Amino acid sequence: MKKQFLATAAVIATLGGALAQGANPPAATQDQRPHRDFAAFLDRRIDRLKTALKITPAQEPQFNQLAQVMRDNAAEMQKTFGDLRGNRGQHLSAVDRLQTDVQLTQLRASQDQRYLDALKPLYASLSADQKQVADRMLAPHRFARGRHRA
Image (cartoon, rainbow, N blue to C red):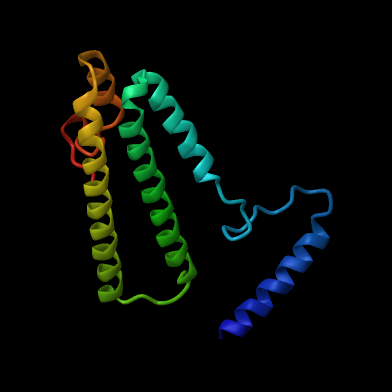
């Protein structure tokens, strides 16, 4: 059944391409789309934080530690989601989906703890003005506007 579907899809794609000469090319499938450069995005975010917080030379070690945790957490999450994408298309039972959800929740909790552990010493070293900026930029926004994002 799956082979028939793939063969039919290939024929339709070939015919569709021949019939639609000059038309817009089909949208790329998810696997063909270029992956976003999350490392570059994160580095820009870290640079914006450092600038907005006006990190002093004395605060740099604590800030660098926080930045490294952010990079490590992002790399770990990107790898985890990459592994999950590798299982795409496979049937997952309700138990499998719930188990995956529990694993992701545990991963987020451990990452939040590492982030908190790195944030505390930096936050303690900040001036009152820096803390106001940090309160806006560094705290998770899960409880924003009185709503919990599950």
